[in-house]
Length: 430
Image 1 (cartoon, rainbow, N blue to C red):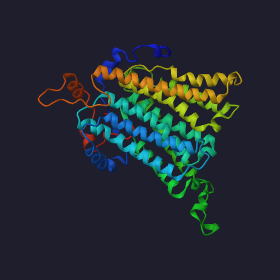
Image 2 (cartoon, rainbow, N blue to C red):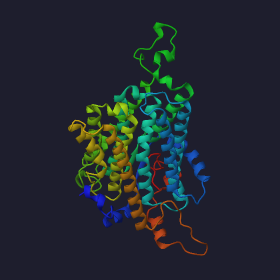
Image 3 (cartoon, rainbow, N blue to C red):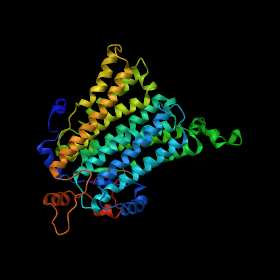
Image 4 (cartoon, rainbow, N blue to C red):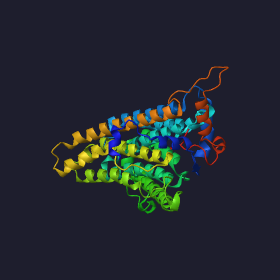
């Protein structure tokens, strides 16, 4: 089954590729910010050259987001040290650029008539990686490393909720966005970075009542005798709870398959297994580590398990788009397994060695997997990943390319007009 897939020549079967060609994107959005941002996105895509491939737009935004976050991590690897203000400005700018580019790639695909299922998959794949870096950067900006348990909770909540968003899509067949969702979360994190940049990261260490500077004891607000950093944490916990309840209701009640099953006809609870195989070992290893591996190397730990989670999420997206059963085991779990076994045998190998191995192995495995999948889809659909085919004047377009563009144009008129099915910042196929 799955573990041996690493040695197989092809990752996607012929049936999966056929199902992928027939895939139609379905999305509903009630976001508060998206309609307000539509004019900005429409203006931005109008300035984009027609020769610029949509997937190239997506990957450029991701690279900028990752690089700016890595710079922040270099100055505060554990989220304890106060990062320089300019690194927070860079993170805010990098996230804004990523959000903007991620919102126009689908529009660019429809402008150039190059929409395809590969665009949707590529978009979700980049988002799965970005989610890890965005969550970690927000925690570092708030210096949440002083509270390792909160740091762990917030980062893995973001990773798990992104997975659950695609889990409910795998069950219901429709990607759904609420009034407060991805776009709102991204701009909230941008605001956190800007607060750190303008007022200094130390502002998050100040107690709220001191920030409010009440003139007398009688005017002080109750329950505000806490550090400022806990305000975004409390808000994030409330949003996390709302999203978790919404996803749970959709997963349990809105299965679109036979007898309420998933799009592939499998149990609606089956995707819980891969998620559990990532989150549960991460929690156990962090809590039981005799060398305090998470506290001492928080960023490396989050990135290592984040790459594993990104691989698992990508496999869930592919299972949804190909209407196939999701594989449970995966080669990316090798690193976490070694960390777990090493603890079981009283850490015969330094944990930091295995943690770095987990990060490097998970990263290369994710990149290898995504590259192979993109290559197979490109060959099947006869399209290029980062290049728009140019048809000389007087010649008809390649029939295969024309067929793909016509049958896979997953953009809708509602998207073009900024309606309810418009492209979402975290999941906008093209």
